[in-house]
Image 1: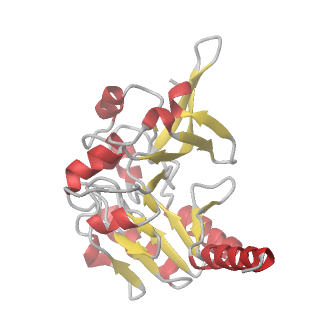
Image 2: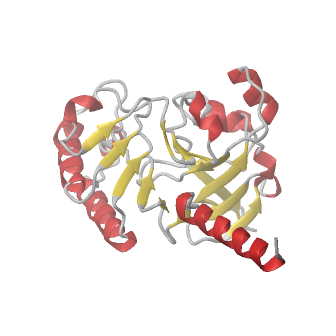
Length: 275
């Protein structure tokens, strides 16, 4: 076969891969990602204001702002579908009066724009009773679409994720903590892209693997949902995560080699260099 024919075949094959197996793209400045005309977010925590009020901190409901923000993102990205990676609501266990009132409003308004797929998180008990017509609630083990697996992150995902290229998850609320020369500390939400330790994954799923999916950990969509500084030893992360260890998958990621990104796209380099 002539060289030019090989080159043409290679180019067509690459083009088909790009069309049929698109790559995830961060939305600049936002805790959101787009892949194949699907907008993906995580950790909305509707009703978290109630917990703040119990601690004496009075924050007005953010639900309307969250709806407006999402509708703007849907329009901006021209998304045809929305995937929420868990923790739509906040109270656990049960559901608060605020959530009973605002979760249906949130889902109804947004689902009028695009269909919604939800992977329930550990805060989503009782969510099934408040769904709109255009909303699908999946298993807590997540679901697969083409080369991507969608998961909340609090539980081991279905073994189908082993055959995908990307595992998208929330739950951790990752942030990088910084300290200036005067000792002042602050944190910034970050994206985390990490590889999984293959041997740990093989042990858990009792199978042999050639490769492992790349994990993309989402920052929380709701800025009031809290942040966990991940440039800390894992034991400190465990202590700060009130609902238990951050994630079984997160725990077996190669965290020191993981790459972190600010919402504006700035690459902070390897996580191990930020500790």
